[in-house]
Length: 113
Image (tube, rainbow, N blue to C red; front, side, top):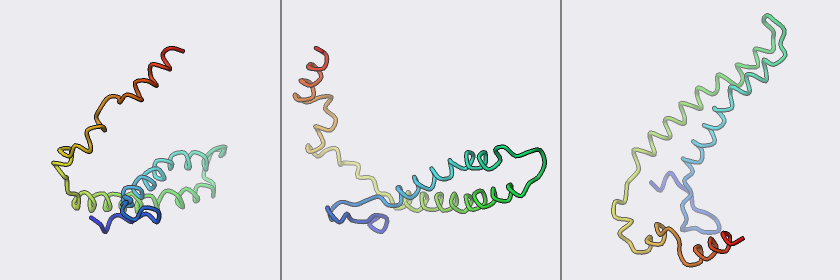
């Protein structure tokens, strides 16, 4: 799955999930379409106006972007490999601990205020 990530310039061992970042950004752009169309149609008098042609500029390319998102998601999901034993490593034990001593102390300090 290395072909779906890039390394960081500061931390070369870190792998950035570029595919998921692109899917997230494109999905948010698609979700904004209703607002874009509404703003284009805002304050139009009754009838057909040239303004409506502009809707095609934002609406039609969205289908290609949605198709790209679905293809990227299908590709990356097919390439995924789950490490079923990753949590067996004691390194991850603190991740699931409800609070360590410092967190508990901070909570008690805030509760006293």
